[in-house]
Image (cartoon, rainbow, N blue to C red; front, side, top):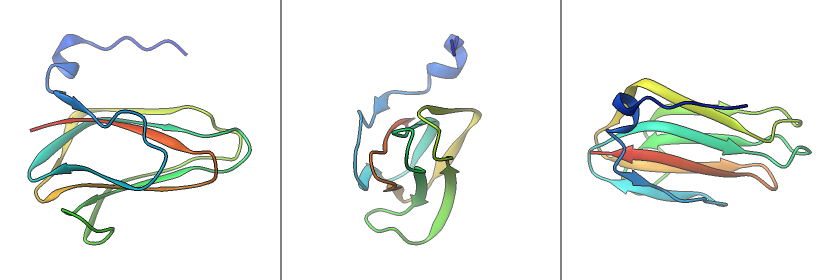
Length: 105
């Protein structure tokens, strides 16, 4: 698929998590999530859960993407960014999965 991002949507993203292959702390403190990209290996079902928490996989879940075993590319662009007050904790599940988070304060 081909995606065209309008400047107004992308101008709020100041940072990227880069490609991550494991659970990680993406951002600390108040942040907005502008887009998520979940990659799978086409054999195992990938899952990405985003928590509004400074350091642990607990608290409020602000987003969850559950892919099928055949999925290799799942992009999500929010027209209104998701707001996290405490931080962004990304929890990844699924063998061969990876993700990218675009975010900014």
